[in-house]
Image (tube, rainbow, N blue to C red; front, side):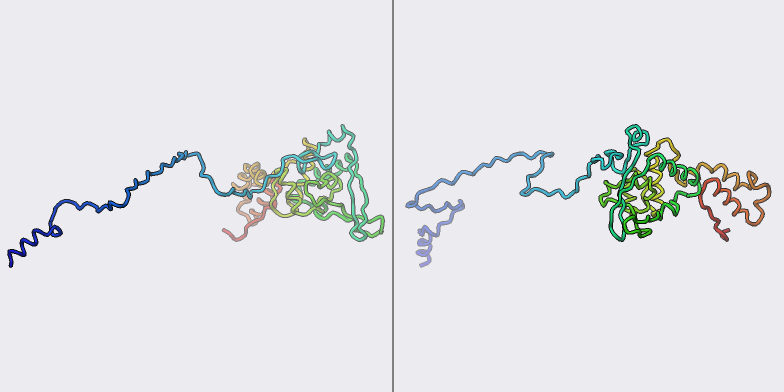
Length: 286
């Protein structure tokens, strides 16, 4: 029986062992279809300087800068913001009267006003020459608080003030200067002027107003004494004198005065006269 089983096992084709790889079964009845050929897609090379295309355009929210020149708002204005023609140009073109408009705070009536160019500027120039050393780079009270005029319509005193354009580039700077009415401008309007005339525009209103007055006078008379000399410049100019005073006061106060009480106060008083700056002594520091 055992031999018969062995013979049967060997004769069975399903039990034949083979070391070769099996061949896939093919269906004779089915037709053989060739495999599809691969599709070749052409890829455009991307250069380093070439941007990747985007599906939507990017919106530019950066505000455009204002033009450098404008239409002159007045015959005595230039095409630059907050800039007027010099006095020689205005006189040669017969611009000797400067007009403006005043408004009453009570009856809201508008009244024209004119300023004589040369007499008004001469009066202002004389005031600056005589009082500049005592201003300490600050506008005086007369500039900071200009008086209101009496209205000719309602006869109300202290009610008439100049009409200042809400558009800063259309402000009549020359008429405000000649009438010494720049104090009616807001601090923002004065900073606008200093910005476009490249002046220092930080600080209190009396400081910015002072710079506005001197800058406008400088535009009218470029050769006049209207240069703004900052405090640090005046200190640097007087450093040799201050050094002599600090050594012992022999330059101006006399020998041996540095050992006396109140020497620091006297030195600072001399420094204040030299630099026109309000020096003060820090007491009980040493």
